[in-house]
Image 1 (cartoon, rainbow, N blue to C red):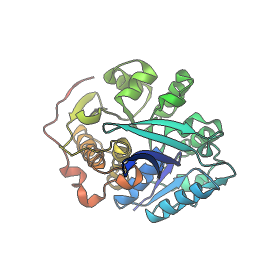
Image 2 (image 1 turned 135 degrees about the vertical axis):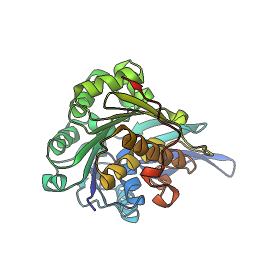
Image 3 (image 1 turned 180 degrees about the vertical axis):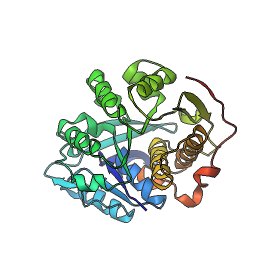
Image 4 (image 1 turned 60 degrees about the vertical axis):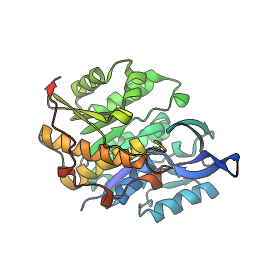
Length: 314
């Protein structure tokens, strides 16, 4: 089986929890790309994480978690800065983030081994690492390497977004040659000030092969080959939505890695339904990387469609 390369940030989330009647912060390894890499591995495929990691105790904790989850991190570089911390507070099941660390430990990635990229089945780039010039340059070099199917998720964090126009241009650059762009409905509005359908049309017009817009508890919408379809999520007992989008992205990459690029709308709908189920199940467990559901909790992609396709022209 081919392997997946995931390029982006790893950091430590400080989750606000209650212990013995007191509010305290519990450290947990996180970062959207790291979660995606762990999600792919938990589904049973080989994942290789590429990023810059702090050389402190928290950086060691990140490496240990990647090893524990079966994710290859030999492509990571160590940097002599403190590991970035993301203080995470929950309001209901939805997380809010505040980031600490300058320069960010995840933003110092050297040029990557392009032979590793060329041999991959899929390449994911995304999230807040793309806001950092050094890591962005490495990601662009990886993205331009022929071979893997390319997927991107901007995973916008408003607290870090000083220049929406710059990130919008970055997303458009990646989308123009992407096989799949995944973004949330809030990401679409924040970056483009447009609704999901208009953003999907725009990204498809730039050259994206398919666009998936996640809608939280309402599931997702897929846009491909002149058609649009909706997928409704299964009912779950949600306690923490922190890893939902990352689990969705992991499942999308796993499906492309194991099944190849879909060629019909029906195949795309099945892939998106599989991914929506993964994202929904992740909400039943607190945390990020360790909330990614294993394949045993999911149906095969071909059997994961939820309801009949609802197709309309774009």
